[in-house]
Image (cartoon, rainbow, N blue to C red; front, side):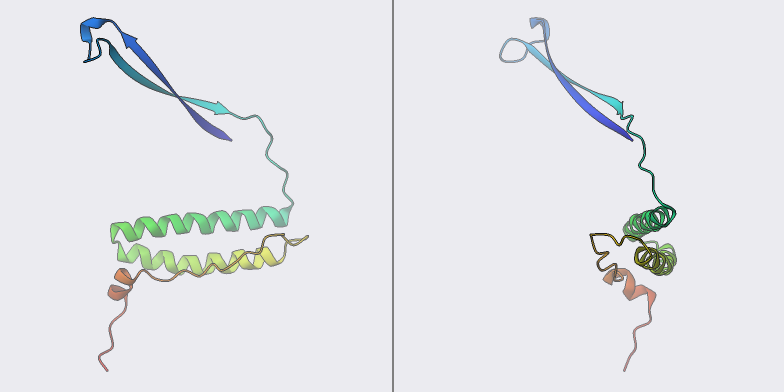
Length: 126
């Protein structure tokens, strides 16, 4: 796992570049990557499949947010179709886990965004 830590240092310089208080102040921030050496946990095959299905659903949700922000209707529609299949896969994998998880899967329902859904379907004039 790769994580970053930020270290900010406050530096005072000479009075040539002074502010109202008589000294100049510079704040420098550095990003240091820190690598943890903990081994990845060993997952059973059914746990690994459930993990991959959950990762796919999370990635599709992120892509959906981006497509909605871009107002890309075709991409949004395609992703919503993919998402229903991915959710079905995740539910199936979650039910097959042995022992069953302590945390329930919950509702994975996602509605179409109202602004885009209005453009995807024709409005019936009854």
